[in-house]
Amino acid sequence: MTLAEAEQAKGPLVWLDMDQAALDRAYDQTIWAPNQSLTAERRAAAATEAKARLKSSRHAYGDSEIEAFDFYACGVAEAPIVIFIHGGAWRNGMAENFAHLADTFTNAGAHIAILDFTNIDDAGGRLESMVEQVRRATAFIAKKARELGGDGRIFVCGHSSGSHLSSCVLTTDWAEYDLPQNIISGAILMSGMYELEPVRRSKRSTYVRFTDETVEALSALRRMDRIVCPVIVTHGTCESPEFQRQGRDFAEALRKAGKQVTYFSVAGANHFEMMEQLHNPYGFVGRAALAMIAGR
Image (cartoon, rainbow, N blue to C red; front, side, top):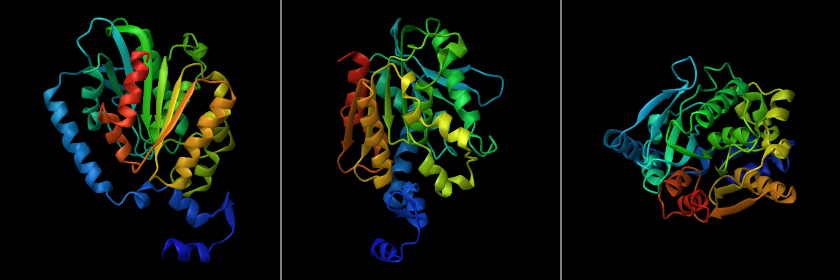
């Protein structure tokens, strides 16, 4: 069925101007990225090459095997630390799949910690478990920053569902971890979801156990009072219109709340190509991320 035919056969609206079929399409990025397999192939090749070439260390932030991160040092005694939280619809991905990002940041004088954490299926559908892990990993890195060669500055970067998890890191009450509220120096949020109600109504609810409490607690749009650092919000113009709306609305809400936010879209880029924009230091996202870290 074409989009025009789908529009003519539209059923009852479930979110904004979308019926159930349209909302389900809006949260399935494969529909909007016909070259997904090619970007995945390029990413896998780049990550495999980087993992073999670069020296990394493995650090545990919890007791289970998955609760650890790969750490790539930049060779500078005191440097900022970037925490990268990968995407994959909350279901897929491992730290080793993103080893190539180490080149982007270490060559610019920053360490990078690429997190591993459980997936939503192993977590029994509970997003809360995943959020708790990435928050605990961030707290661990903050407390061990000097030992890791950090200078005290920590930046969080995430893509897709990893951008959602990153936004949850930003909205953490850090007093619960015996840390000050300003432990994050800046964030780069790419192609994420910051209000979970429409996601709850989409087909993603078949594997995520959304509750009223989940949506309220883990929608960054509802927890912006805890965000105290500069934030970059970005997405591609070839992503689903709903993902683009999520980014625009979150950036506008941050602006209205008086937060320091930079928002831009990347022309001609789909959801998966945004990761290539981050990997490239001359790409729109890579350049913006490195400028933030450098304080420019």
